[in-house]
Image (tube, rainbow, N blue to C red):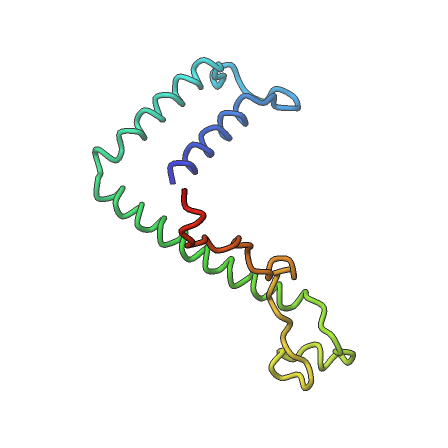
Length: 140
């Protein structure tokens, strides 16, 4: 949450310091120098830093809300990824439009593709070497 506040602060500062791009519409009384804007912004940031010490309950609730929103966003992104990956993968044997819109379980003769990404080299068992000898002749 503090990241969003920082982002808004720096974006506002950049927008404030950009040239107006047109005729100067401000009057002499409304001019703000860059040093005044920077000092006001630093005072605002200093005030925001002490907010959690003044309002600990608000910070605790805000952090819980941010955590909950993060979990929901993560779950939503996973659901969106699953839906997009299912719809964008080419389906074998689906020639008619009606077959393409059906779920994989509803299509006759089409099974879900394996999600195994192992190559044959990955499936070969690891080399273990010869077993140690237990002969008394070779023991020095």
